[in-house]
Image (cartoon, rainbow, N blue to C red; front, side, top):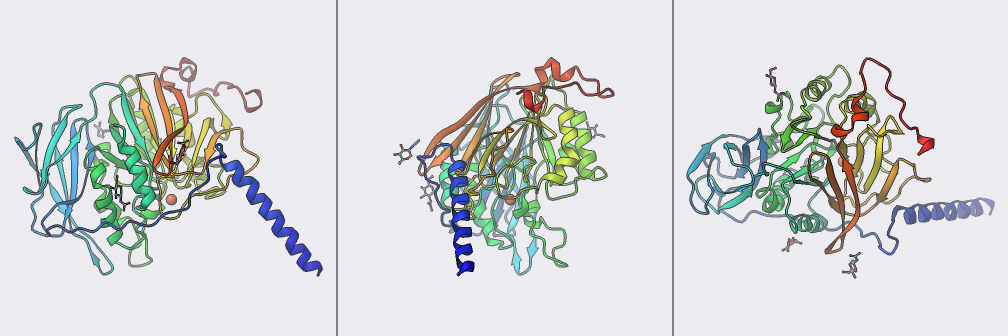
Length: 446
Ligand SMILES: *[C@@H]1O[C@H](CO)[C@@H](O)[C@H](O)[C@H]1NC(C)=O
Ligand SMILES: *[C@@H]1O[C@H](CO)[C@@H](O)[C@H](O)[C@H]1NC(C)=O
Ligand SMILES: *[C@@H]1O[C@H](CO)[C@@H](O)[C@H](O)[C@H]1NC(C)=O
Ligand SMILES: [Fe+2]
């Protein structure tokens, strides 16, 4: 009797706890959280030689890498391109790879670097000497520049809806902080994902870094992981002096973007750490006043999901980013949206990066619905909904961040904020690294 009463009280208590924290999770309480939606499997119905899963990525200042897959192992790795539809006055040949994963054998994965290309220009192109014409637009020569930031994408009906919202307004470069296909070792889902995103990723450069769903490690047989990811989503790591596709950087008008790897070594003796130190040291803020970083497992997170998972990486690398005056750090992993203040070492700090989690692309696992209470004063906006973000770099000093919530088939601007680049803050640069850091306004005073 006493036992069941105790059980009743406990379950009522947990019901209330969950109820109150779920209410808190939403700033817009009139909006009810949607459940996860069905997986979309996108099949290929064309010829074996036909290019599928086409996507483009930035390589160096004025080149683009075109990646696609053919089932036909003899299809050529060539791209024809030009500025007029149907007229290809340039052609490039690249290389190809393929991989095996247990009983799965991938198609021929082609990587072709094309250029030099003019900025802000639409190019028409064709892969493998035949097939349909595609087009992409190169980033502009001068600011403004618009990034779409979208994490934990997956391939569900929500993914489809998020991508439709992304495409409803122009942008220049898409940044993805990890967890792409959610294939989770089931390799045909990598192909399906490639086909689902082709419509978008063949039109604008998609720059990605890895999440936990890319690892696909299997003891003894696949000990190092990332086999499919590295073969299919080759990023310009060699061009940024990195020795691994799991972390790299690139410049795009006025902005230095650093893609870090949450699922490879990051301690102070690691290759990644040394590379990051050198990369940060080589940034010229006169050329790229904006510096943004992406990684998968967030360093700051007040959601109940994935607590503490980014903590060892934060402890290892946060000081490097802080001293380099990084403007924003984007993360995924937590399937919700959360925007923080500028932070360094768990305290408000006007010279630290702003932290934003956008793990809300629409994957099959659904939303991370509950946040920790009471709210941390560092967390300025948090909401468990699917959606995507847009960072518009207006000029050398100002940028605008906008988070668009998926309201079913509509897209709704739910959170926005203006940012000043730290490159122009004299207070933040009047610091001699050899001396004590200045006394910033501390937590209690704000
Ligand atoms: C995906 O979205 C497109 C519109 O962007 C729509 O035409 C298509 O039917 C959708 N597919 C599925 C399976 O929902
Ligand atoms: C890469 O390293 C080489 C030699 O150390 C250097 O000349 C070059 O500027 C570096 N490139 C980048 C993008 O850091
Ligand atoms: C959300 O969508 C519903 C149904 O389409 C619509 O009635 C409502 O006005 C939308 N709300 C917002 C904030 O866009
Ligand atoms: Fe993840």
